Image (cartoon, rainbow, N blue to C red; front, side):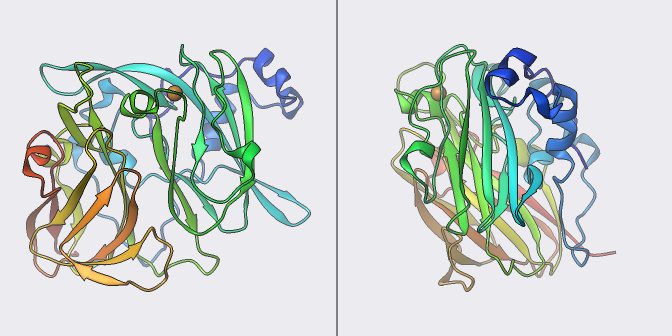
Length: 337
Ligand SMILES: [Cu+2]
C-alpha cells in the first residue's frame, strides 16, 4: 500500500541535478522515483493480520503528515543487484513544509521527503545502501547515519541548498538505527524535523509480528531551546485521537526511537502489560522485561508485546508533563475476527 501523503508537493529532482550526480542516464524521473520508492513499502509476513485502519486516519492529510499511515510504512528502496550483491538505493529530498500541530500552532518543519519523521529506511545486514540526497531545504543540510561506515559516508559535511550528494555504505550492524541532519546547530536542525529511523534486519530475519515504528520528537515553538509540544510520529496527540488498532494476542514488534532534543532523557511506558526489550535492536533474544524503559536522545530499542485483553490502553513517557504536551497515545486492542 503506497501512502498518498508521502512526497506530495515534495520538490522532485530536475535533470540538471541528476546530471551532476551522473544519474541522468538511468532514466529516472521524479514520477518514477515516487513509484519505485514506495513499491516495496509493506512487507508483512502472511501469517500476520493487520487490522484495517480507521476511516479518520487520514484527517491530517492537509498537514502532509499521516501518523497512522507512517506507523507501518517501511521504505526498502529500489533494489539493484551488483555481482550478486543487493544494493538498496534511496532518494531523499530535504525540504520545508508548514504543519498544523494543533488548533493554535502551525510550525514550519524542515524535513526529509515531506514528512516528520522522515521515511523509515530498511535494509538487511550486508546490503549495500546508497542514499541519493538532494537538498531543497533553503539552508545547508546533511544526512548522518548511525552504523559502521567509513568517514566519507558519515554525513557531517553540509550540503548547500540546491546541491546533491551520494552516501554509500554497508548496512551494518543489524539493529534499530537512525539518521539525522548533522549541520550546526544540530539541535535546531533535528528539532525542526530532520530525522528518521534506519532499520537493519538481521540476516535470518525475525519471527512474524505486527511491526510498527514510533519516533518520539519534540517541537520548540518559540525558539527558547525548550520543547513546548511533543509527538509520536510527528503529530501531537494524534494516537490519542486516533487509537492504533492491534489484534488481541498477536505479537506487536515496536521499533521505538527517541529523537527529542533539549530533554536529556525520558521513559516509555505501556499500560496494563509488559514488553520484552531488544536493546538497540541488536539482539535476537530479549534481555529484559518491563513496562517502562528509560531512553536518552537517539536511543532506540525493539519492544515486543501482545495484549491478552481487548480494550483501550495508553502508552506515553512517564514524564507526565511531556505526555500531556502531546506525547501520548492509545492502542485499541480488538478481537481477531
Ligand atoms: Cu540540517
